[in-house]
Image 1 (cartoon, chains in turn cyan, brown):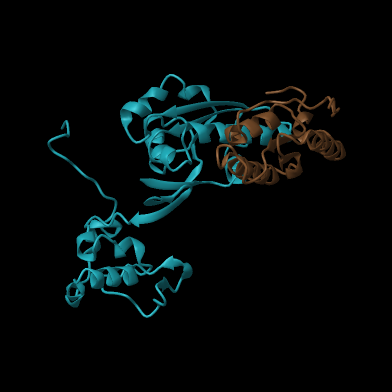
Image 2: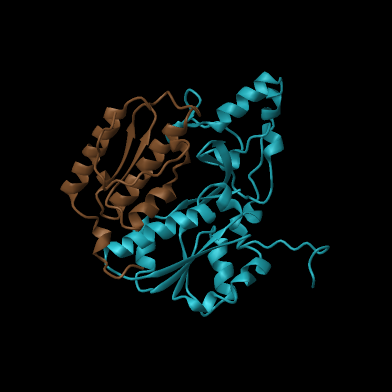
Length: 223
Length: 115
């Protein structure tokens, strides 16, 4: 899923300081699963903002709404009857949400309440880790189910580097060296010879280096 | 025991403090409570294993939120006591009442016309 973190409250307050009526829109997709932008978090943000405005003796009206997803036009469309009732709209979806909303309702202002961070999963309750860098050419099968693009600090295809010590990456003692894990797993399973084959430089054109990406599935597309 | 404690305290009963969520504490502050405290079972003695520990984390989160907003985090607190400690319950109530009186009314009650 896409993982995000809530922006600091002062940053959000600064965005909506001139608004008298605000709508907070959550998303039931990834940000609900990583507990940052679902209906529950929309409620918490609304309560926090109301407290902040009351403290400053500013009267503000705030409504809450959570869409099924903010990255599909049919759900974005559900705001059409209410979008003009507000001075500003806060989106708690990933970075896709405020952009889809802005495109659908160009007259309205949309403010992001979260910082979108990475593609990852929950490794424990309340703890998420990065697992995918969305490079566009998956190589996980070469590395026994571990992605060095996303999980090696240098995205090395032929590792580990000299910064690997006692299974940890040199950038942090809390970060596992993924190359240490790859080598150990290959040894355990008798496949260490796989690593004798050098991996050539990756073609990054399928990643962000090739510019913004687009996926067209002809069997599904209407046009 | 017929112990007395300050009458300005409103008790909201929950089956376990694990039921108390961040939004409940924030709503109390938002609605004008000068302080809120959660009285949970002793740590390690939760009937549902970790309810009071969850409540403790949520109280800590709300304290952080209040701090960020420039409101005294001491207005929210977590206490732990057993169901058999009636005198301690009354003592905590008096302690919290004293703390809030010293802090004065919540700064959010300045807005005369409530939202």
